[in-house]
Image (tube, rainbow, N blue to C red; front, side):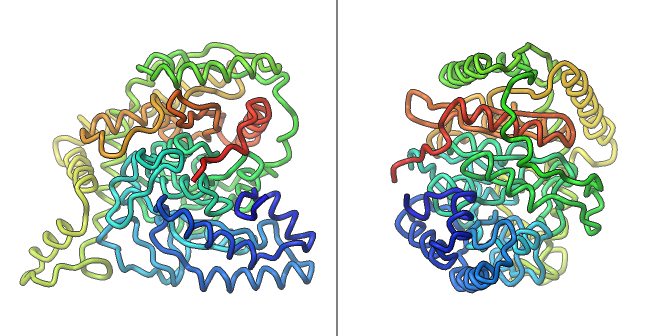
Length: 483
């Protein structure tokens, strides 16, 4: 097996045995990135910093002082601050921003010994479902380079699928980890809201954003969560509940697990390939001992409408800080302060970001707050209640991740059609529950199809147990595109 093909678990075992060095592994992934440059998954690479970190990891390995991810090359979505390394958010307005500090989750990965190789491309400020809304680089799906890899964490998913790193960090505000993971045939996890610190993450929608891992298999996702989770006093929304060992439940199988199928998720105009592939996977799980039962999430159809009021409203507030004064892009031609604000923001933000700022500002404006934002928040409460009732009847909810497989780049020019691709992932964010995508098959065109799993608050362990058992039954974990 080539070095770049290895999972975290495989590489960690080889590093511990001394048959391989972290420097060799890091050089191997940089060589892989160069050889598969057509995927275009990175905005910034840090070869010098990565090799220095790899050498330090090799010293720790030799001294027997090796933390769990020691020497493992990992990529980071360009929404997370990395001290001394450019962090753009995929936007012109932060094109040359170099943060003076790192996000807590990046610090945690470094403490666990991970080697950060670079920053992956993304939709601008995480606003998009195709990764086409990026000022700096548009990635391509490794399974078919003419197709989208999904968004907004598309670069992270594409990099993992192309074996350009062993794992990557993404963020998920309305499906931005799970949807690209599904499109690229890898594993993507959105933890419970508050499980992973948001400190140092460029904010999109603060009540929805969550950092999570993109990996080659379920065990690697559990290993990443072990390193990432935990309370952070610098994040006021960080959970104080201790995180378990997420690998502990992986081998327990499906026997006795109640898997709920939400009928509404199969009534939203699913592509026939998606429906057939997902149902075939569910049949396999039932034969393996899972208790499959139908459940209802009746307010699913209102999720997109509620989300596209709540998220833009929070984005309008969060992105007001980018005004050209202290950092970021500034128009140098303006002669007055107000003109400088207007020109800097108009030129610095892309079309999709400006669209959402306008929607959010309108929804929060005097006279409209009660009609829009408050109503959306009430719908959100109803969706949370739907999940509470459903999870009394089952342990894990399973469904498709997206209504369709990946689509050709440039074919969804209508914003609404793009927004609707997240109809099955958005409710998880509105409820704050954990969710994930697991490869479950392929469309007739050879594009990956994902299976979504969701669980109760802080029950990632149960969700990962079901995912690991499903992964074993479906036997797709090692399948990679030919580049």
